[in-house]
Length: 497
Ligand SMILES: *Cc1c(COP(=O)(O)O)cnc(C)c1O
Image 1: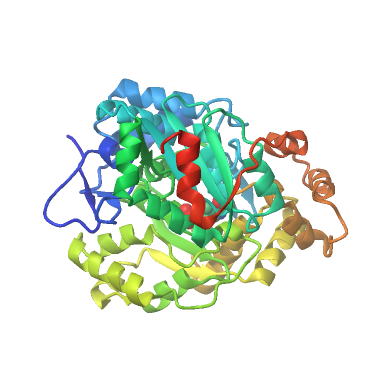
Image 2: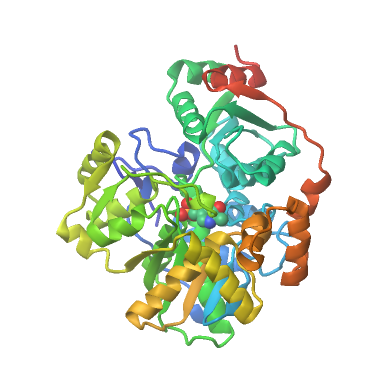
């Protein structure tokens, strides 16, 4: 049976195929694509527990991407989850202090974005073929740090694609900038803009909506697509690791099959935790979904009060990938708890855009019982890194620490001690300075790579290749432009005038 997709803001009953939704990224009405129903796992956990990551990936993704053939899907999976991950199991589980850390950072850029962005290029080029698209696909991305590098790495040298990444010239960390400007691949283009992340994002969205630009590109054999987390092609691969984690715990005898577990996810754009919710919908025995925020606690407030309100101060924290006030993927959950009511979703999203806030009904709130919101401020986050290290020797990054601290609060408040999985979203080496500050105190006198060396020494973990590479990699991208000139820069690189 083919699974159809629908826009969360769609009028009427128009549906599209999975491959079309991937190709399109965002629906034309501004909504996000969601499956019209949830498929169910059709292989028992008894079998899944003996499968490799790649095999589980196939069993999960085939349920969602029904218009891909078995051969197409397996081909994408094999090319994505290979030796570019530094461990054969792809997503290992580490037990420390009463929880299982699901390490999602063993890909090329050492953050969890690799889990989906390793496969998205293959899904997208396959989708293009299936929809008779002959244009070259141009991925246009604005980044505040992690997504840009993971997307560049995923799309570098992938035939039939080009990728352009815009980042705020003075708004990313030195390591993040170095990772991006040293990117190899003739089809990659990295541009710093004189402006902030919002300027980059606004410029990119404007180009997506520009009909003249679209026509000129088409005439030259190009079309835009998106690699950010609103693409269903990023969400579906993220469901896989929750199924795999459960199967893996069962295989190791840590849980018995059918036993419920809780999952805690450090959350920004709400993509990762939504994938856990989807895993629950397809039949994984997940009980509570614990949504962990940093000091930008807009989601915590939403779960507490039913009001989503972005009118508040924005804080820069040590977990920058969660510094976000508009969690785009929450729209998919809103649609679900509204009983698949796209008109209601449209109204709420219109309110968000005009007033910066909306309030859900009591009926909708009642459908949120699976979720528990919490947050950790800077002191709690850094304190948790130190405590866990001193207690167990295990070193976690700042984002994972937010989740770990919130999980501890959850347990203390509810007494719920079901087996717990915590999504570990970045390697501590990506945030060496914050992590070493947490463990040692003031390290402001130390250079970045001195801190990396210290981290290697105390964690007993080898320095990841992603870090070693940027110690010596030559800079390949030096373009900087004003925010008004983003389109001109894109046209120039593509040779479209
Ligand atoms: C992107 C990111 C997050 C947030 O994930 P969402 O899917 O946006 O909620 C958390 N941690 C790290 C390290 C990230 O890069």
